[in-house]
Each structure stands twice: as C-alpha cells, then as structure tokens.
Length: 93
Image (cartoon, rainbow, N blue to C red):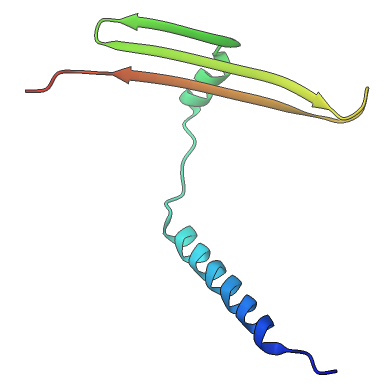
C-alpha cells in the first residue's frame, strides 16, 4: 500500500513555517540582563500583599511562595511568584 505523501507534506510545511517564524522572532529579541538590585528587592519582599500610597503614586507588592511535593518526603518544586508594581497617574498639560 502506497503512503500518501501529500497530507504529510502539508503538515510538515505548516510546522516548518511556524518553526522558521519562531526562530526569526527569537533572533530579533534582545537578550535581557539581570539587575542584582532588582533580584535583591524581590528576595526581600514579604509574603502576602502590601499596598502603600505616597502623594501621586501607589506602590503594591505581592509574594506567594509554596513547595509542592508529589508524595511525602519526595522531591518537590518550590514556586516563588513575586510582583512589585508602581502605578503613577499624573495630569499632563
């Protein structure tokens, strides 16, 4: 029995196009840098949510840290989600 190549070729062409487009976009994206001061600020953020307002700006922080294990005493994964947000609204002439 002959193998129908037309449907396979269409799928391969579609996925190949997506792969080439993804590669092109990945090459154009500038590589980020790590700012140690920001990393230290994330590490010092307390767990939970805080909100502070000073004059024209409001600052909010949030941190959620948990360890997830599949079985008792087994290997786990630590999840640390930290957000530092600044919202500033100013009237501009």
